[in-house]
Amino acid sequence: MVDAGRHVRPETKAVRRRRQRVVAGTALCGAALLGRSLATPPGSRRFYASTAAVAATWTLGGLASGPLHLGWIENRDSTLRRPVVTPVATGVGAFGVFYVGALVSRHIPVLDQALTRVLRFADEGDDRLVMATTLANGAAEEIFFRGALYSALAERSPVAGSTAVYALATTTTRNPALVLAAVVMGWLFALQRRASGGIQAPLLTHATWSALMLRFLPPLFRGRRHGTLDAPAPQD
Image (cartoon, rainbow, N blue to C red; front, side, top):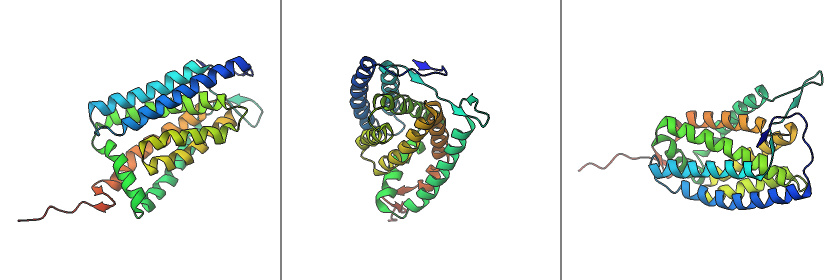
């Protein structure tokens, strides 16, 4: 359950232990499914089914772990409001940084190959389905990693801990570009979670960043294979 209330009560030890058990099981299951999802052919029914399974796992595990909270930010007059504009602007700014990083990555073979591989899923799939899949998985990740997992680690450095688990789960994709993005963005999302006390801020930032990345990054790597441009077929 996502709690929209203004006041958040401290969790009891029993609630936290239950949350930790659910989170541990979900993390293992979700990481395994994530790795399998990117091993399927781009644009295939298996790809959409497996990514939907990943999103469902993160979401159901996060909600089953215990109450989650949307969070608040404080205005200058000490009143509270839901975070909206700032998280969206943060997502735009993060995209700008990653876009520049993508331009640089084209000259680094390991990252060039990694980005080319993952962006094939955008190029070879249905645009609407890929966008829906991306946004659904982004929201699901925030429900689980910055919602349930962060709360489960509340007394154990939740920013660093949730970021580390997020990155470890992403290693199942065997894609260094995705792991690097998980470290950088996971840290940012966790800081937003700490600042606002809930998942709305990181969720909006994640959605904005993901949508822009999906819209503008594929053209940078279109036609590239293994760090080089596709060469024309030899003539007889």
